[in-house]
Length: 467
Image: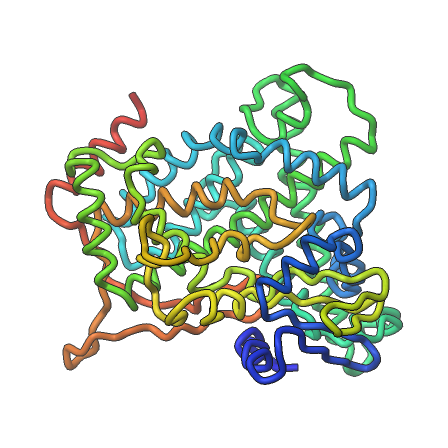
């Protein structure tokens, strides 16, 4: 198995061997899916047999991430978790959080203005603040402990969840090897990961329960689960555990994936600077340059929406998806897929299939503009957020955050390449971290206000938040 950016290798295998590539490692079969059509046929249309998850000994058993709904087997318990998220983050329910997203993004504009070199830190803090407010009604602070725990726990998890990352996933009996044994470094990694997973579930929960018991808890995902239909309910201990796990999953996983998509947008602007100019022309026409764009402007800003879609396509946040497992033997177009095979949907490969997207390596939002001649390309959202019964229930919230971050940033700022000592522009490489979730390696860019009027607009918008 390749050790970094595996999705690139898998995509090449797809071109060489076809849309389904079977790999076997010490008797464990993995099938890589490189076609969106095949992924939909199997993981969606045949979801009754393709909705299981692999055992993931390292992450679920040793690191304690069995609480994550996304890793759980398709059982009645899983469906309880799924129901909470589906209800809590439906398109309509997600709109209830738009005012929180708007507030934090406006504050982010001020941070970008004051200290643009730390744009990645500002974006991380902004998205973390949004997710924590949505999860528990918690207002984050500078260098916030809860945000730090979530980041560290998530990074530990995604690196360990990569297929083939640890031999214990292939040879489960290795989980009994003691930490001191030569070659058992994975046990030390697991122990630290377990500690973070426990902090993730316990510390914000204790804070949230204290607020709730005092009667001062702010409206949030937590309070919506505690009080269905706005009515206080005496929950069973089992139900309380479900609520606790779901709140932990939300703030642990949402922030990291949304951040990766926003950082991808910033990187893309350095690879396609002409997009900035086109977007600003559309934004100026709609806002007149005298106000910030709002969610109500979405129908009038199709190019901004196209940029958001292209950001999700150009580089996948979860490039190899989350693995599925087929629970019974299956045959697909002559391919025999044995029961227990781990199915890896190479979402990066699907998003760069030149039969779906012409010139797939280029960042071209125009491909998603209304009225483009010919058949419109597949909506990348149908790939980026997973498939079938396992599709991401928080996708509407993530789309909102990405869209407004793009719209407000491009209205107020120019995003340009930095230069070396000789004055030559530097185009950062498209290199992403390996793991289940992926983000671009740190890169530099110049973020400057378009003119003095936008500096004043940011100041006015921030001041209006306290009115």
